[in-house]
Image 1 (spheres, rainbow, N blue to C red):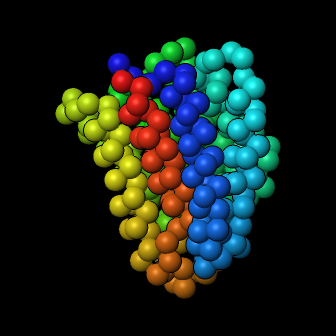
Image 2 (cartoon, rainbow, N blue to C red; image 1 turned 90 degrees about the vertical axis):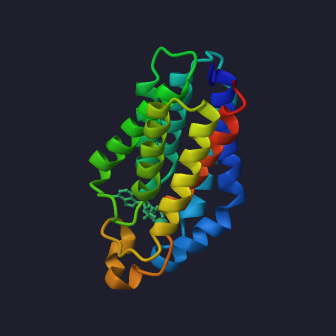
Length: 212
Ligand code: ADP
Ligand code: MG
């Protein structure tokens, strides 16, 4: 009961497709409070990831996420490269040795990934960053696990929580990343990284919910 390697690979492909489809949208959001490159950065990274993961012959979930991490770190110049690299590196280490991922493992892995991002980027909740989408998603997964709901239901709640967290960045004043240079003027705009993090949770939901 859970997601195996095929579903994990499908999650990575799905995230790459979502980033490509939303490249202009993410870039436009970054144009409002940053330097207009978030969609370009993420698409460059995930476009490099796809051929790398398709070529993997050792079908190991941890190794898959490690490859995603290393490729993002080496191909994305912006803040989002090392930060998403941290997300996938932590997913890889949390899921080491596992051939299947269920709600409990995914809740632990996503929680550890958010903690790693916070440790690396020093963003607190409410600082108007990707943490504001990832943390509610991690909390929703933990709550779903505690309640014993089906994996698919936990995944759906995580996507919803990430979406709510993303929308909640709109009125916030940025305290980390380039948007923080704008101070109060960053309020009234949705954070680009929180938006791509919602896409990541959506990709996980779409791919993992099939692996039951
Ligand atoms: P850059 O800011 O270098 O141009 P991107 O535009 O690709 O990089 O990514 C910007 C996004 O990165 C922001 O919208 C924010 O969500 C995220 N971000 C920036 N700095 C941090 C940080 N210190 N912690 C968490 N997320 C951050
Ligand atoms: Mg940028």
